[in-house]
View (tube, rainbow, N blue to C red):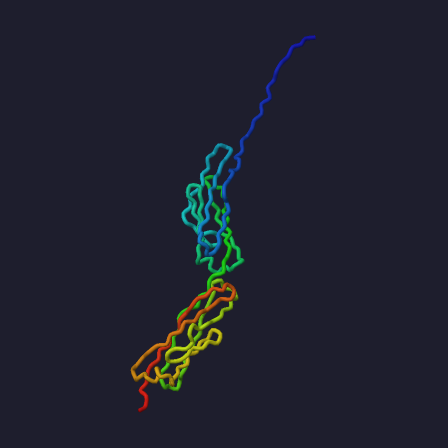
Length: 231
């Protein structure tokens, strides 16, 4: 017998596949309505083991998917700026999100999610009120109401207080949100008015929101027209 040998070759063909890109970095942020900090930011990276070099596409200021603010992407760093007018309706305890899917040159995307916590907005006392009365006329009152509101849109309740109810020529009274001014024709200041005279009484009303204890004020101004008293 012989101890001869021989060789053969086995050849394996390997076909490559496009590996998925890998995103990394900060993809979440959080903000609070009406807080001093109005922006959140973070950096993203993208890599590909195939030795490709994908890049993140810059984005100019663009609204998030839910419209609570705007996203910007610049050289891999994203910035989100909250839109206070869009978040005004949020109340304390509310939580919403805004998102944006940033794209790369290889068509992959990474979504950034911002969580926004609501806050209790201050009461708005509404527009100032006006009224008019005439000395010694049959009608001695002027009426109106305070249109207080809260942009949170919740079921807020309000209380109303007059700074000083007694004016120079009459008095102001409140019943809920309704105010009534009553001219005092027996008041010497009123009696001294002559035909053609025009004076005013002004009152400050403070509105307090019960849920937040926030306050705001409005002014009621009454114009009094004098009359010629009998001799």
